[in-house]
Amino acid sequence: MHLQTLSSGSEGNATLVRAGEQTLLLDAGLGIRKLSGRFQVAGLGLKTIDHVLVTHGHLDHARSAGSVAKRQSAELHCAERIMLHKSVARAPSKNVLRIGRDVELAHPERRGAPVLLRSVLLPHDCDPTVAFRLEHEDRVAVVLTDMGHPRREVADALSGAHVLVLEFNHDVEGLANGPYPPVLQNRIGGDRGHLSNEQAARMLEWLAGPELHTLVLAHLSKKTNTAERAEETARRTLDRLGLGHVEVHVASQDEVGPNLRV
Ligand SMILES: [Zn+2]
Ligand SMILES: [Zn+2]
Image (cartoon, rainbow, N blue to C red; front, side, top):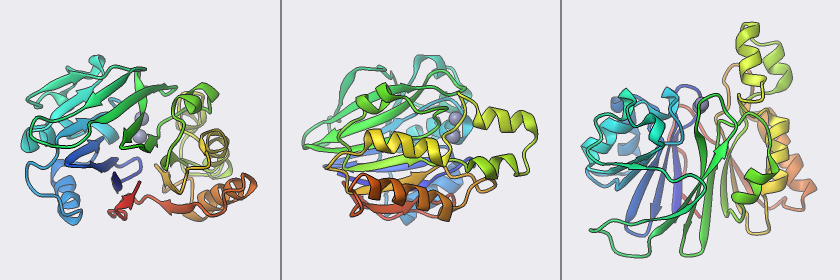
């Protein structure tokens, strides 16, 4: 299995997962033209995406999910509550995401083992919001962003990642001294907002096992965080856990990331 971030941050999120012959897109939060450009950079042809999975209804995740599913003839998977959302309306085939249960994703035209998908509920101000755990041929990738505060049971349900994509949204001081009005500061820093670097470190402590080899810091705020601060927090935590060998990447809003082997 391979994982590649196409875009990460409040302007739009999308991550590509290739598992055997199947290709999955997790979130489609950029406009369709921009997203198609990222597909090209990632070497993706027409009608190569089999499944589009949506974590939640915020536009920076769902924006063009329906259009991508239509263009790519892909199956769309989202929570029942956002089935009628404009962003997913154009999808030709919609499946209800079964939250909390393990589901096998397969495709009639693709050979190889199915992908085992687990969707885990997160505290965030859009109900429901989920993180994804994908397992294929004993390899595990976890993608977790848009979480208001650390929760042990969420980490337990997402265990065993070889590659972990984890939100490091803001720096607490950066948020307090940043350009946002108090209402927005309270939303982002609140229990149903986004993870600060320190909160992400707490989740990392619970999520990281001996099999973890690559950590991708995701959904960084351009206005209230820096890659250096997020990376410093992540490295300090990994060192403390005896996982100093883990590779750390910072997912970019503007550029396609490396195609990481899971
Ligand atoms: Zn988001
Ligand atoms: Zn969100």
